[in-house]
Length: 397
Image (cartoon, rainbow, N blue to C red):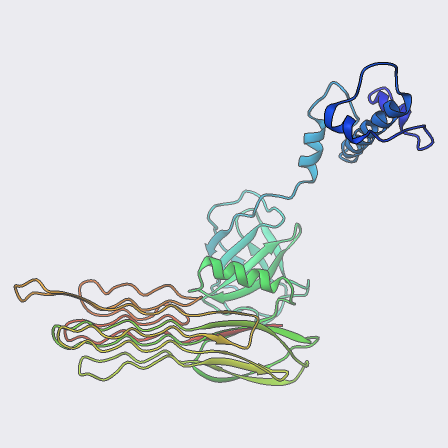
């Protein structure tokens, strides 16, 4: 090593050294008779830098070579974090619940660690040794804690998220197919600190959940129902409903104990007859003395004559450490033309954290909410509004 790094002769702590003065640091070192202690100090500092570089090169499996200026960069690359994983998506075509099979896009020629896969599953999960094949071959599928996949880990029609750990595919969660990519990413990051056991409740009304074996806490996500869109009389345009609120938090649970929750219904559509749209219902879950609650979005207002309805407000979240309000619905559009054929569009329905904004119903009619907490659009020209989409509760323990 001394041949490649000659300054190491000065690295001994016993070598006589002195610190450079402030003036020397600011103005440079003076010429003249050799100041051996100062020279030793400078060489020592240089030796420290050499030592750090040499250690990095050696730890990467290389031998320091003064003529090779790319060794440090190669050493850094050898331990650098991999680039952000690319999400691969696919649809399961298998009829065997123990063998998930999908051609993913972008395609993969080999499995690689830390690469995630979003797959729309074709069967309910089942007890037993589950495998998956996303192109390169068959790979074992396990829960995030390494245990075998069990019945209830996912249901047909959900998007299951698998993460390659270098030897197997780990299930990190499952969510409704309407969940957009950003929400899947959020769910994946949340599930990384849990056992990967996920329960999804999407049917409006009350439900019960039993804390699984070994659980001491649970991460809960709740989304309120979307509000219904307002109806409209002749020559009127109804407003869109509001999106459901979102709340997320951790609650304390006891394994084997039964807990209760509620999934909010979607708001009813407003009618051309004047019947008002109704708000979405509240979704909630209670455990360990804490209640997480996500309120539903408001119903859109009725459009009468040349008026446009009042928009439905977005719902909110209470009780968790993370919450987002649903977006407010939009006013209907009324554009007089002077010819009697006025331009009418019902207002857009508000979106939620788990559902996009409902678009204008171009060409008449209405558009219902398209995902958990999504609101219905307003109606136009003697038309009903769109119905709100129910909320959802997701429990991970």
